[in-house]
Image (cartoon, rainbow, N blue to C red; front, side, top):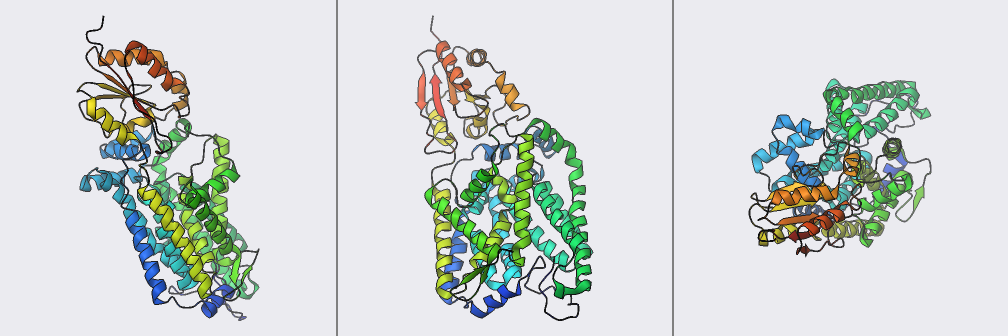
Amino acid sequence: MSATTSGSSRAPARPSDDDTRSALGADSRWTDRLARYAPAFDTLAIVVVVLAVVVGIVLRFVQRSELWLDESLSVNIASLPLGDITEALRHDGHPPLYYWLLHGWMELFGGSNVAVRALSGIFSVAALPLAWIAGRRIGGRPVAVAALVLLAVSPFAVHYGSETRPYSLVMLLVLAGWLLLDDALRRPTWPRLVGLAVVSGVLLLTHYWSMWLLAAVGLCLLWRAWRGSTAPEEGGHRGAIERSSALRCAIALAAGLVLFLPFVPLFLHQAANTGTPWATVVRPTAAVALTFEDFGGGDFLEARLLGIVLAVLALLGLTGVARDGRRIDLDLRTRPTVRWEGISVVLTLGLALLASYVASSTYATRYASVFFPLVMLIGAAGLACFVGRVGRAAAFSVVIALGLACSLVISFSAPRTQAGVIAEAVAADAQPGDVVVVCPDQLGPATERLLADDLDVVAYPTLGDPRFVDWVDYAERNAQADPTAIAAEVVARAGDDHQVWVVASPDYRTFEGQCEGLLSAISSLRPGGGPVVAEDAEEFFEHASLSVYPASLGQP
């Protein structure tokens, strides 16, 4: 993937390692105009940028919500003996690397909310200098600053930098892979190619959606290897260098599969048996809209506005060329500086959605973490199109203000789960030996984590360990459940002298009507009980009600 060269008829020299332009593509019109028109960042601008970055970093470590389902599952799986984690994941749906890392982290720092989330925060902060370096290679200091700011204040990055899930690690690895690929295209030495192979393999071991990104980048590299250099001034020699480099990089990406091969049986088992029964197939247009909405921070007005701003910046990054301090030209052929990043994003999402449609699985916006860093680099190129002092100040101010506002909402809004409220209510009146049943089982991990050890906590419909959710043949198993029979088992388990507590929500797919049926059946067997905590869907992302049914001791 070529870098910009001069108009000389001679074959240009291979770019040096300290060249700030990316080997993935450079655009002399744009970089020259940046140098000519963009004013230097003055002291006030530097102070604002530094403060924005510092606040963004702090927000990654201040989340005080209790762990919700996905986070609690991560901790529970990682808490198992190291040799048991892979087997546990056969019933989940993820590759093992993040859980291994979290296991080691918890051995050192414990399993508190703050401790387990800090690992994601560290990954997220570590991605910031990589974004700076990548931005500098794309367009010098203006794009470097823009990339750093966008990633630092991004509500999407803040959210997953404060959640016990693998997505901040994915973002870090994608940026590391971008830099290694850029280096290898400049000079495909063995250390660089091996590093590229390792990163691709580690990505596959972190999240399965990485396969779509790797496939997209691999297709781009094979295309460049086939077509070679297309710029007439570059000459045949440079084209040969590019074809060779692109082909070697494609082979290195494929070589990363070696690290993944031992886990192919795990992946095939998960793909055949787990799936995504908790949601439906998403249309491509809806996927794009939801992705940019989540990039902005979620389903509220400021977040939607920030999502629109990011989409506009990405469009400018792909097509915008600064004419001067007041005008931006649009080049519909797209700019070489970020053209291949844009193609990779479109291909990644397209391949993944096609596969999801064929497999009848869903798309969750958190999966976009595999291409989110590329979108941020494209957006940074768009933000750098504002080269005039006033225009640049206004553009940066809008991005920083909206980004931090939405990130603050994420960090300091209502807890992500109602499990804390429910646990407090149970603790206030429960007795040792009381039975707590969570319906559905997806409420189990977050709830069980907060309850006393002397309670008998079980998950509907299996009445098994509430710390885990077995996603294997999930919909089929739930369809066969009998709420009345399970209610009788729960009441018998409690005996005559223990209360029955029910944590329930009717809003889960594959459980339609079952939790209501369970509550009705238990109520008929243990009359006199009722709701203790009302379900609050407005306040909490993960919400549920709590009901208690008294002991039957002394009843006729």
